[in-house]
Length: 213
Image (tube, rainbow, N blue to C red; front, side):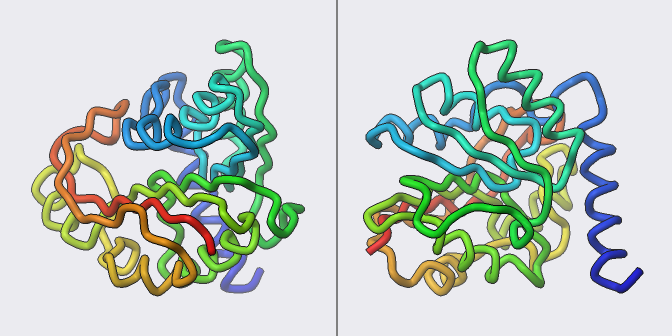
């Protein structure tokens, strides 16, 4: 097994362990910022990368979106399908690494990156790949922890999030990763999180909504 495969195996094992519990790690309710922003968009095809247990994808499906999602965790998919059945909707959920999945160029009207903290060494490359999957005129909705969040998680582990600065985000990084976008909103701000077992307390996030040119 090469070094890349070893790292992937560690990553997959970590998230399968988190999602194996009966309780939903981040709750069954959608992220508040996602809810606010989806209300502003015409319904179409949307992709949820690193979607975990499906709370956001299922919510979008309830609104009428044609929903695709992916994650490296089979346990996450199992929970997402369970939640979708509970809510009476269907979602297309794939398990695997983005580069191994069969998404098509300009397939989606929107992509929602909600706490999609990919490993630091691939996060920018993944953003560029995801950009290719979005139609011109399509929308990115993004909320993830900022580099300032490191101080918050060190003070309160219950708020969750990565503990290495390179996996966290800055406004400059978002501008660099999504250069061909009209910025509708791009801010760093403190928020109060109450999402399931692992997002509880004050955190610092980057919020970004952009329209692809």
